[in-house]
Image 1 (cartoon, rainbow, N blue to C red):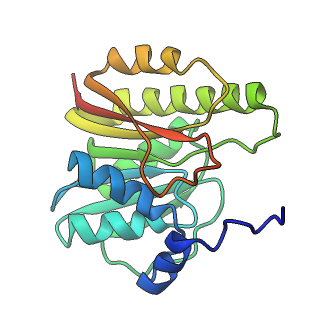
Image 2: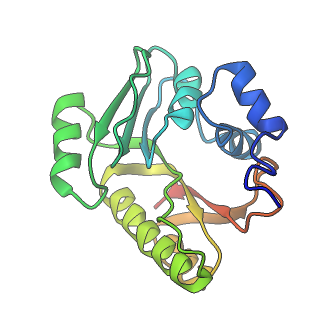
Length: 199
């Protein structure tokens, strides 16, 4: 089967038609449609933000009084959105978050989104373990930089006991749900953990 067998599906075409940088935006849209975690005026931190499609979507919802901050190891091409700013850096770098707090005058975010995924090896156990480690760090970031009552969205890959992650998330949030938006390809084992109402 050719490598591009599903790349240009209807969500790919829709993203292109609507000016989004990646089809993954519709995964977040599916979560938003169900849980309504994003609202006008919110401050949102997007981890693993490249190429920026989540940021484009969030920017339109939070509006001129809101802010979306994107972080990625990869440089993100300028989005040219007045309420969006990007930082190139490592999610494990505490100094990066201190810099964001200082420069953007935001002590706590209303929502954190994460589309982070490790560089995959094709070995489910290895990739799943790496995904778990990334998401445990996302939870650590939310513990320090997400406001009480705030929401968190994390992508997970198959291959690890996702119950471990959910147990950790339940220590921080009143409600933890697993979601698989329609935009996820049928051939993909990925899903999302949606965490609501931080304690």
